[in-house]
Length: 221
Image (cartoon, rainbow, N blue to C red):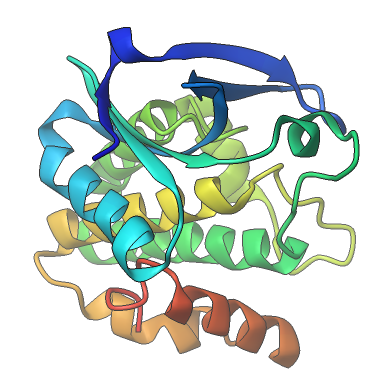
């Protein structure tokens, strides 16, 4: 139920009420859905498992849209929430973006240190490809990824990228996949506390609690 094809739905964009960006929305049978996550066509099983977890285990009303080149998961939302009328777009704390950026940087620098500069350059290219596929703001090119890698997430004037929950989940999922691919194991996921050690204690704990409850809680421990 609610596994649909492109011809079954209408997809358009609306302006974000607070940022200079567009929000993809899907309409199906007079109901509105917002994009949660995007998967390559080769990740059909991952997309289905992600969708089933949201619907079966978390009680969310979601659609799995199957297309030729990608699969995407959309969650039901009231249109007035997206336009800012009678509600606002829910944002996670900026520290969550800080944590995700620390993870990206840690995996990149571990690649450079353990596998060498050539592999690090390839790793950066793969990050850019993954972020582009997942439509991650400020991360859809190698130049953009270079800027992310050079940011200091712990600086007092740090301005987090405009990443919302679906972006953070996509980033963590892709970094887990790339880390496993490059290192040949998932030991890096067990070192999360070390990666986030310099964060504020409360921010780190809030992020860990959110991650534990998410669909990726069994990967990043």
